[in-house]
Length: 381
Image 1 (cartoon, one colour):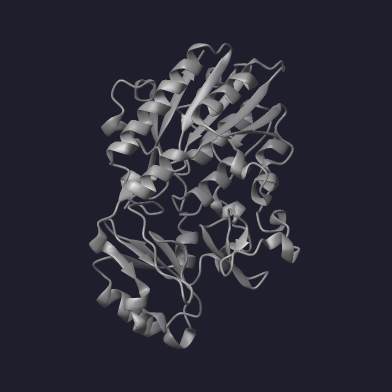
Image 2: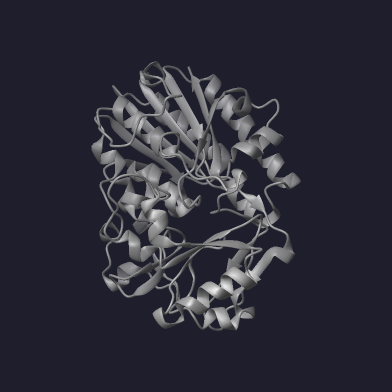
């Protein structure tokens, strides 16, 4: 298992960029990003969801991406979109922004939420209909609001105006797109737009989508990588006075069907829980009834020891898995009492009454090298 390194991570990428654009950060600047890299008029941070370092090394021969890898850095913890995209948007680790996975138990509003859609887990009710402001859930100040430069977010149209996006984008403007060609064209237009100094955050989600559905080692995922590379090569060749920093939120790992665990088949474990598992299938948070804590520990350490490592959540916070420095006061509740750190390619899931358990082919959130390590790609034009 590979622990995130908050001296060499996506959080440190944001520290380097913030320093170059007139803001400060408690997290160290990334050593592999030099000051000269960030003196361009345009700094473009491009996040390709699911582009793990190991995946790129396996399948990226001949691409502009692999040819310009500067370093191997870590994701944050957990290695999942909800936590890591928030780290890019806020410039901090989950320790500070408090977003801990797709499913989150929010004590302050008394329910479990799907955090990126900003809906209730039961019924998908938009939390804004309940008068819940996402700014009250996410800790800290948006990265864009701290910069002494124009900030632009190039995002898929379907998420460009969601409550979560508007909350984390802060004062940054949002440019939507609907296709891969539209994505690179939008970035190009922003590069050419007149401005003294500009930070462009550009997010591409579809490699992750393919990886979930068909597996990250599938031919379709490999072809998608080549399609992305072709579009980026054309766009980058025409850019001037621009530094491209290309990385990812996480990588993925493919899961064998026999390693998918449904908690429905473990009733003695389920009776120990006070609510559904939260977080991710590769890193679930367990809320355990105090009177059942010993039963819970015995069951996991005997019946599931082949599939996971049991850890007390507060110990992982203190050991720096979620980040450095003082945690958001709500973090301890959001990570439950225990964490199941899944081994190999195992996944465990829990679902609401009446729902079928759905497993992806490709998964992330865990601590394997395929999930945890992402590339730092730097191209200066």
